[in-house]
Length: 268
Ligand SMILES: Nc1ncnc2c1ncn2[C@@H]1O[C@H](COP(=O)(O)OP(=O)(O)O)[C@@H](O)[C@H]1O
Ligand SMILES: [Mg+2]
Image (tube, rainbow, N blue to C red; front, side):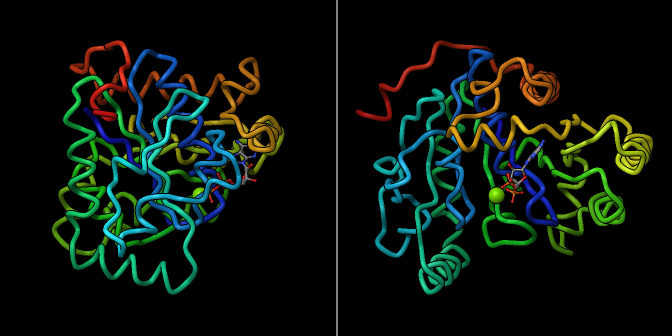
């Protein structure tokens, strides 16, 4: 039922790693989980264990009027993935223009996935503004913004709080209260990292939904093409992701009953 949309004003902060880890952690909580990749980098599939040669996906094939259901993939992590698909620059621009003209090409698949009361949808996005972001924000139960515990991220807090990173219009005003933050790559041995994390935590209060430590296990997990909770379940990062998943469930899904996962209707 709820959509969790990962976003960030900056790239390389861990959105895709956390999207995969979070999706897998929610799956282990007994939820049916769909992951939707809206980033042309098409990397979420790698984190979730699809073969590197499997480059097909939905948004990259919008111009061909692809059937989104036919693009869904079961993954070894138990998460059902709608990959973005590989696209060259022209393909990306064409897909963005098409989505801008027909937002329902993404909004309708999201509505269909969210219609399942037992399902949770986790969406990954490219850094900063994108055509997909306001479409996702419209249906998102929470926009989960990933920040690093550093000075650059701290400086972005006013933009987050005002919702400005979603644009300047009504959407930003409507969605700003639903923005949560996760701090990634927090390093307790670094005075700067701890100071930045403390500052952000004090400033955001309950809107800080979680913090994930800097942990080599996150990078190793990608090398093994597994979410961190499957690759290194005892690692500090995996435990932090579990806490984040629990906090999100408390926040967004009190009414969504856990139900056994079935793939039946998708294949019908
Ligand atoms: N908690 C973490 N600890 C250590 N490395 C991390 C952590 N989170 C992400 N990384 C690494 O940071 C890099 C960027 O992560 P990625 O998920 O691709 O970011 P984004 O999707 O925001 O561009 C990757 O090399 C990833 O392995
Ligand atoms: Mg990414």
